[in-house]
Image 1 (tube, rainbow, N blue to C red):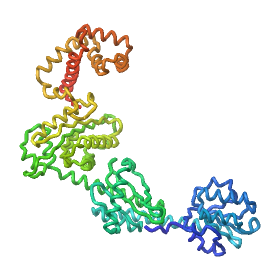
Image 2 (image 1 turned 30 degrees about the vertical axis):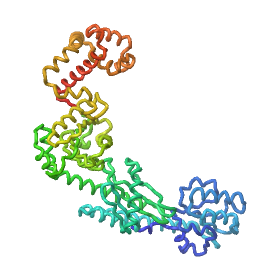
Image 3 (image 1 turned 180 degrees about the vertical axis):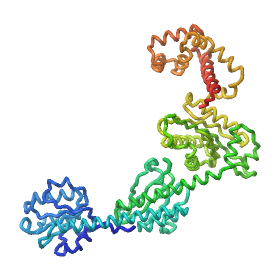
Image 4 (image 1 turned 135 degrees about the vertical axis):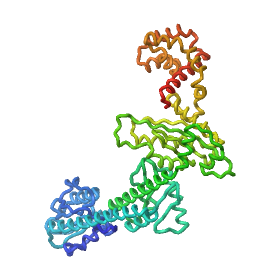
Length: 547
């Protein structure tokens, strides 16, 4: 698509109705585009201008009065009009030097008619010309979109889409992604490509990855980069851009860019989802791990496609739970549709991800390809991005939790590390961190939930309170839990329980009577903390709720 839809002042004054017109000032602004034609005689009505209008005037509102004519011209310039056409005659026989000076200073085209003209004929002619060009531009844009659709149906790759884009905008276009090499159409010299790619890498690293709008970046005084992120489900995939030299972006060029970006996003989504359909071996691996079946090291390597002679890489296990409220609409996005997005996101963080989605859960095994000391930071960043994207897709009221196991060294131990991620997920409400290594003493609870010793431990430390609550319908166990969680702050505990402080005092006195006055001592407190969480863990186990 060309830019023929734009009518400049230089083109307008070549129309037959301007044959007796002369440009007397502002020659350097003749390339300004004309968006509309408007008759305006006084500066008082300048507020009705939107910018880009070619103004027609007889001088009736300002005549030869210096203050009025300069105020009138200054208002047009301030309102970003394209130019001014003045019919010389009774009201203003000639253009004064001060108006010529101001127009030249602001490169504002000032045109005079030496013979009377009908403004209605000019407006009708230029408006008809503008509308015809804009309609043609819309038809060109529609044809361009159809071409994009056809390329998509032919499974064309990024180069074909870029070539189609470049043929429409007739300027340098580019494609940049953190995951693959940058592409330029037409091709740039190797040294220029390297320089441009490095510039984009530095610039895009600081860009807001949540903003999908068009952005502008000045490369020099006469050259600018215009680009738009390619987003899918809130995840940044790439950037598509173009470089303009001594030219401003117009709405049709920006629409062409937007259509191209949409086609790119659809291309990436189809490609990622097609890849997901071919991961049968990966699904088999997780089915074995979830079922807690022991697998030999060599079998794990085969399923993961790792060389038998290579050193076993460090890895992490992650479980993500996405629970939606029952009142959500049926067209809410199924969690498994996020698998391809998560895979791209985790790969960008330096991991080789293996993902299995079952029900409302994602089971993830992450091979650490960088093997650096910043693996935890990368995991924290990946989890934050996964939670943000899942929240955008499933709604703000969705409950999204995560558990991350310890670093694994032997692949045959992956099932055990997946169980650690399960435990971290189960205690997500109690812990502020999704990492199993941060659970502290509560890591012990996962290994003995069915042992009699755990039930007897709970009975020994909480038995009197449980019996009292059951007999009297009180809430002493819950009160103790909140009181301990508040670090023995009576004011904070009362606020969390929504009761008066005096009521809390009575409950604490009863707890002391049943458990002993030393129940808050360090030794007794740690046992009570474990007993309270062990009881909740057993209740979750019995109810089948682990998150």
